[in-house]
Length: 335
Image (cartoon, rainbow, N blue to C red; front, side):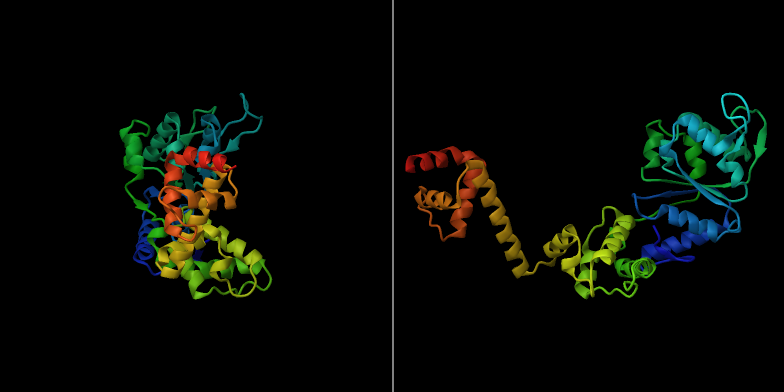
């Protein structure tokens, strides 16, 4: 997910400015860093920015998703293994050795097994580790940056995460807010994404959005955060021609936008649509044609008329509460 210009976080919101300050602070110190936040908020991007703004920027930045490996596989990935034994003939360095003077980024840190938590704690205390199958201690100055979508404090309280490890990792930490908490940055992020991805679509680098389309994008809560926004921009660049308007956006974005506008005309259209959906649902339940439905409406005890939407709504309410049997009897009586 690319949400930044080189060395820059896009947006002027208070949240974006706070993240810039944190990146600058974290880049100057050598402690481990913990980044928390919902999926898709840009935690890896923030980790890379910290690395690129630090004195380690010329060294490797290597990352691993802790949830993708079993315990022994993850140990081999992080610490490496020596030659012989149950492994291949040649030994292999791990990420802590490859990035000895750089940065190692561990995402979904809450997935670490108790054994690897203990190994990581020992490494953070001694700046040395051992390869699997070997007892020799290997020094490493790698900096550890971890991230999680979970409340790690809750994991500690539940006994699922080592308290001492959490204490060391959280000395320098930040929560990256979801996109819905920094809506004012959406337009700037959209322009950046168009500039970056427009080059992949001939003629789309200068794609423009109408004011209403940008307003709709800002109104949407983006449960997938920056990742979801990027996917939507890629879809729009690949399928839309000319100025991108609300009707080009994904249906859930348009529905959210119309529902939040509060425009009387928009509300009436949505109410009318809801009425038709309710009618269709009831007709399906009773196996009636629309003509039969109107006949039933006209025979109701409340002396309903087919021209009254309010009367139809009353009937629909009664049907949805379980009165379809009496209506069905009326239909059979007519037949």
